Length: 144
Image (cartoon, rainbow, N blue to C red; front, top):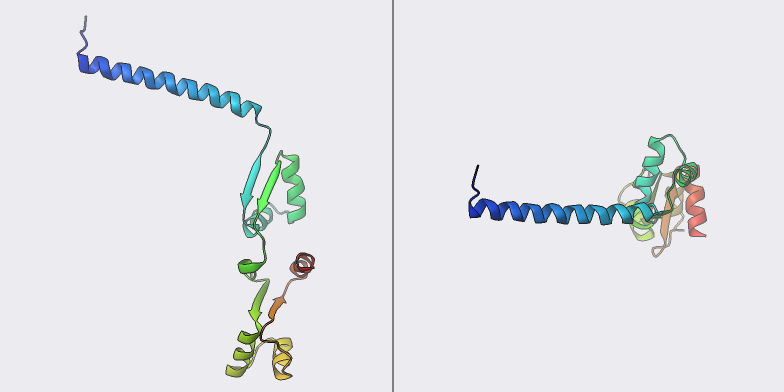
């Protein structure tokens, strides 16, 4: 028969208390999770769009597929603001910066070059150039 030293006995009691605490937390968590009926996701719009493309969906169809799979809410950051142009489908430039670029070197975009040449650029305005039809429609809806 092996006699346990006080130190070993103390360690065994601490481990037993920890095991009981883990079992209590697991039971509480299991009960809470079984009653949860909400699935929520928060992400950037560009990440959402990339995720949709990776599964060969457009964003609207991907939302429908996520809803059918049980998603209850989705929080997305706005695409406009600092995120314009991250995907290469558009870019925004201040009128003053556009005028300065026109003075330094010829502009590659013929529309912007003609605006600068005819002095129709307003320094206080922001110019948004969009290269993709779907992105244009989305921005037009968001900015209306």
